[in-house]
Amino acid sequence: MKICCILCDRYFTPDKMQIKKLRKHPHRIILCPECHERIAERVRKRKKLQSLKRHPEG
Ligand SMILES: [Zn+2]
Image (tube, rainbow, N blue to C red):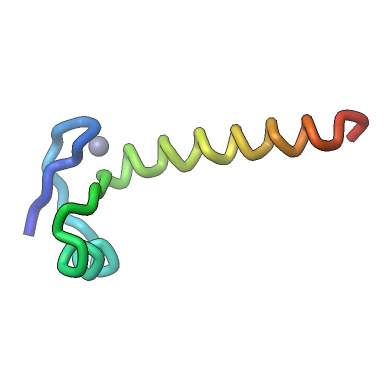
């Protein structure tokens, strides 16, 4: 089974968890591992910034 990543338009093989999710929610957006990692990195950075704002002295 191959699906197309909506971000980079590349085809990739989803892992077992992603296949499960896709079966349950066929219209769910699934990203390739690369894009997923990129987004995760962005979220991590944002979370870091938020915690910095909350604790400006630290
Ligand atoms: Zn991608």
